Length: 178
Image (cartoon, rainbow, N blue to C red; front, side, top):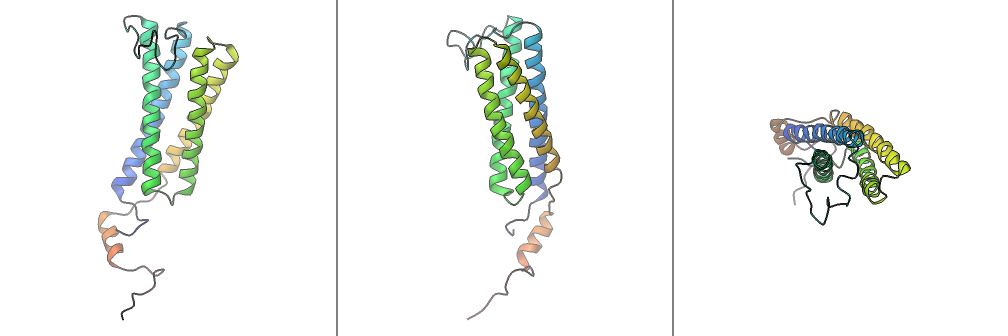
């Protein structure tokens, strides 16, 4: 396969990962709002653990359960984002706009994670809580742009890729013998 040709399976994987990222980001925001609405913002009073050094708190407590769903969805966002970044660097480097948007999304996510930690460690200071929501909204918007851009990526079929690999393109110099 000629470097630069993207197979349909690779493009499909990228698109599915970006849709998963959109869904996970949305879920994280919805559960963050739910945690706030039920007054459970401090149900897990430590970060990144829940309480007393335990990663997961008592799930029988509805506030803790909601916070754990929020944190779990955020973890899915991070993992999916890392998968997308890795895929882009390995197979989609030529998609400069997509790569740039994804890097901007990752940087925004880094800020968002920091604000999530500060939300807990500041015991829900209103400016920090509001900033956490504002950056979540920005992250979600950029994530939508990443997904839309992923749907613009063109793929070649495996057969076309094999043909391209066997046939030099017009931009490649002819092979020299001798």
